[in-house]
Image (cartoon, rainbow, N blue to C red; front, side, top):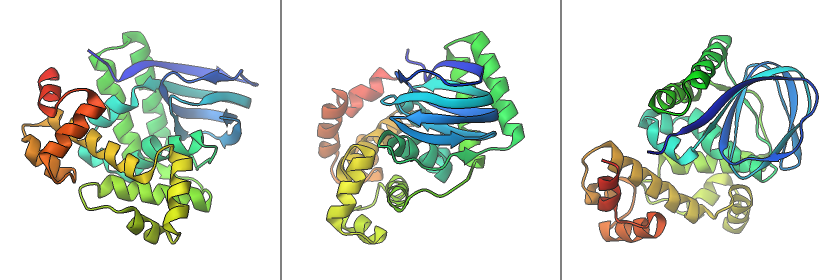
Length: 269
């Protein structure tokens, strides 16, 4: 059985740290103090009561830190997305923190951190402490998902980023909340106020895939989650994720997961 959460730690640092590569996605919850983070060579500042997420494909270090105490949670991004509720999955906080910002940081386009209140920071520290003692398992996963849902629904934005980052953030959020509709790149570009060519190039530079590739993966991930969550037929799921024909869903599913939707559901029962 695969678990969402790989490990948790509570750290306190002063000074700098060496550059390392991430093997898992990581959620950082700042408890107190300040640090200058370096992600893929780009610096950004983190203060007390701030949260951010880094993907599993970046280099990371601290250029400097001062009385910086924080929690860190290493997790599987794909499994987390399937575990949270639909309300959380489509919330602006979850979209921003777990789906949009990690891709922008990977491309050197720093966005703002999200802020949390002291009560939520204390809950994160308590959660990390329990997980450290329990280790990987179902209890740790449940605690982590609860923490993620609280952060996603209660966190607030601190600062604005660049025009390009805002363009991609808004477009990704739109796709994640309208993936069942007939979403076209030309319409996304028009919404952003840029030409389709400029929009597509900027999107791929920041997110690592084209808008159509992102939308296709998003629909398949939503379909996978629906297969695990209920008893909808493959045809009903195809309609709900914006794929017009269940045979198209089956073909795409086999390419992505190496099995049919029915086989995927049976494997996870």
